[in-house]
Amino acid sequence: MFVIHSNSSDREVRFLDRRGDEFIVEIQGRGVRATQWVSAFTDSKGLARWMEELATNRLPWKGANFWSTLEGEFEISATCTAGGVVTFKVTLSGLPGSDEGWHVTAGISSELGQLAVLAGAAHQFFADSEA
Image (cartoon, rainbow, N blue to C red; front, side, top):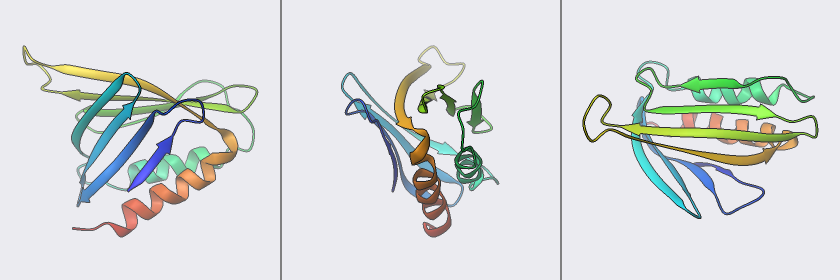
C-alpha cells in the first residue's frame, strides 16, 4: 500500500492491491469516500516516475504537474505554493459515457519536503507488488 496523507485534515488517497498494470485508488476522509480499480496498461510504473520527478524539485514550482491513466479513470495533479505547500488534486471517474457516469475530485495537502518520502513509497509499491 502507498498512501498520501493530508497534513491539514484526515483526508488521504490510498493505492492498494496492485495486480500487474491495475490497482485500486481510494480517496477517503471527512466528506468524501470513493474507490476505483484503475488500469495503467503498459505503464504501471508511470505514477512512481511522476512522483520521483516531483521529488526532484527543491524549490516551489509554477503551474500544475499532471499524471493520468490512459482512459482517465484516475487523474492526479500537483501544485506548489511559494511557501512549499503541495496540493494534490485527485479525480476518480467511473462509467464514462453512461447515464450513471460519475467522478469525484478531492484535494490533499502535503509539503515540498515530503515529496521524496512519497516518491520512495510509490516506487516501492509499484516495484514490489506483483501479482
